[in-house]
Amino acid sequence: MEVSGRKPEKPFTDTVGKSSAEDGEAFCQPCSSDGDWMIAVGYCENCNEYMCSACLKVHRKQAISRNHDILEGENMPKEKGLSVTLNACSELCTKHANEIVKFYCSAHDVVGCGDCMVLDHKACTVDRIQDISTRYFNGTEHQELQQKVDQFLKNIERINKDLKTSGETMQQAYKKAENDIKAFKKEITDYLDKAETDMMAKLNKRKLGAEKLISDLQRHENTMKDDIQELHEKLQLQLNQANKLFAAAKEMKKRITRIGDSIKQLQQDCQFNQYEFVRSKHVKEMFASKFKLGELLVKRAMDKINIAEMEPIFSGEIIIKTPDDTSDCFIHACALIASSRIILADEVNKCLKIVDTENRKVSTKYKLKSGPTGVAVVARGRIAITLPNEKKIQFLTITKDDIITESYAIEVKDKCRKIACQEDKIIVAYRQHIVILSMDGQEINSTFTGSNQKWINPHIATDSKAVYVAYCFNELCNVSKFDFDGKLIGTYTDKDLVDARGLSVTRDGLVFVCNWEDAGSVHVISPECKKIKEVLKHNERVSRPWCVSLCDETYKLFLCNAVIGTNIDPKLKNDLKVFNYNRSKFN
Image (tube, rainbow, N blue to C red; front, side, top):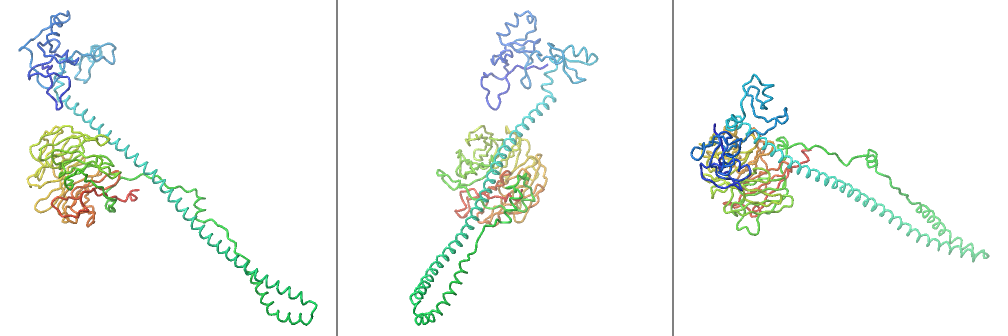
């Protein structure tokens, strides 16, 4: 029976506190359980343990172990396989208090104490756990169990990531809804304020007109009053003079008629129109209905039908060239690390840039020794980039404050250019081939159908089900879909796709690929490798698009134009273009 007490192989990251030992040397197991790594000089066959000189001395003195068989020096067994310590069983039985679990019944696949075996498994073949545990440790069942537990941990980590993302999205959605409610209320109050202003202006205009009319009539009334007073005085002076009274009366006759007509007209003009405010019938009905400002509706996820009906609308651009950049930015790849954060790989300026898309600025710049050409999100707060000139894949961590630090690196055989990650797999695109690696750099698969077609600088993206590859072959540009075993599932070809660059896959499997030409565009492809539509064609802000990414939460489309080797308008350089899909169609 093989046992172990040796130091495990040095892991990827050195373990703090362990002393070094030459290959073939074993450690004292009693000491190692206390964190002390002492070289073993003997092995107890009865206890199945390696021991140092001090422990071996005590072991030989104790009454319980002084007659044990001890192997020393070259007679100690050589370990094989993984490190495992065979200590005495200490698990207490769940059925019989104070009894230790020591036995295993293979017929019923259960473990138990001596009482369990006597009472319930008398007719069964029973093994001592101590005799079979090493075989189990190195066996298929243990490996499968370990793989399942490891997968559970990955699933929980993924769920944790989704929960955090959902939490952030929820907070953003509620904040937006709150802002929308307040904005709508403001629209209503602004509308009512304007309606009140218009109504008051009309009322004041009529009031001023009426006041002017009254002023004019008062002047007219005063003039007429003076005329009448004059007539009255003349008639009084000539009251006792008949001849003069007769002559004056005849002369006044026409004047009297005119004054009478004026008085009648003045009496009519004094009858003003009276105004009152009558409430709008529509507004009264609205209040009577006890209307709501709106409804809170569940927003449906974006799908290909919506995409087919919509065109992204230009929202603005974010300047990404920083003062210490020595050249125009060439964003070789981009990846969303949060709904409001996108990381850019600037190959020419040899750096990574995190862009805060809400505040529209570069929040972090991280300098590198060489230019990155690929970037992929490994997990929340963790990314991987390709550094072809150094022939390595560099892993980095990103804090919530957008601080970037290097983690570890994987050396590769050739200049790797593009990268994508899916769970525990790394998909790497070289100049003419693609491979799948494990997280520690071991090659898992390189047998992609089409690898013998001499792909030229393929671009890649992935979701949980497939790997997408954009490449050119025989003067045609295609986007092919493969499973993780390298089997071809489908291919998208379109005569309008002149030179495919930059892939992005949404949560629902929609593929966005840049059409790299002067009047560039973006092709939107279904999970079945069918064309949904071509967007941003002949858009004045799009020329030679190189990388693209769509945010599933905000429905924002981010795009960067290539600048190296092109003569595009300077206005199209050094910025991140932002386009919005009209989200009202999702509600």
